[in-house]
Image (cartoon, rainbow, N blue to C red; front, top):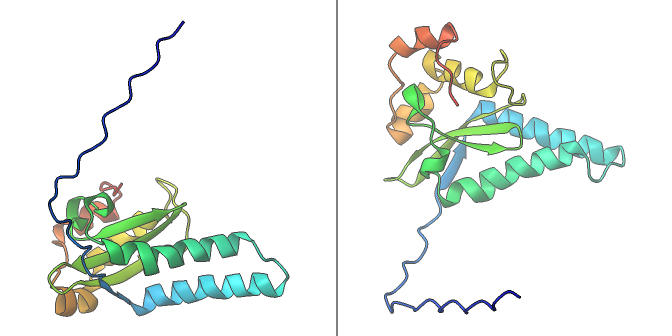
Length: 171
């Protein structure tokens, strides 16, 4: 017969004041990412017009909406969202097989959503969102959004050669 378990001691409160959560970050979205967001919204509304109240379009839009409106503003510079290598100044969140990439500045409490994937993640695929995002960053497509507002430089162009040849894979 098994012996009864001893109850665990209850945690003692230290009496130290608990810090209030920091203010939410201000979120901006660049026009290209806003266009993808609008397309996802339109697909959801079209599904509703066809009488579908709970379709994949609804799920996809709500996942992206939750990430942009709730998850990212709370703690956009969390290390778990960080990318590595030449994209170490950028962050991403995974929602299903969708990816949302952004840059943030902790001094100004601003986030700029740079990329919402239109394709699902499949490693090694030519349309892999990480490959697309890397090429956009290396091409300088985001420079006008990053440098003035967030102070984030574009990664060195020396990485662009490796990315273009498929040597550098962002995980």
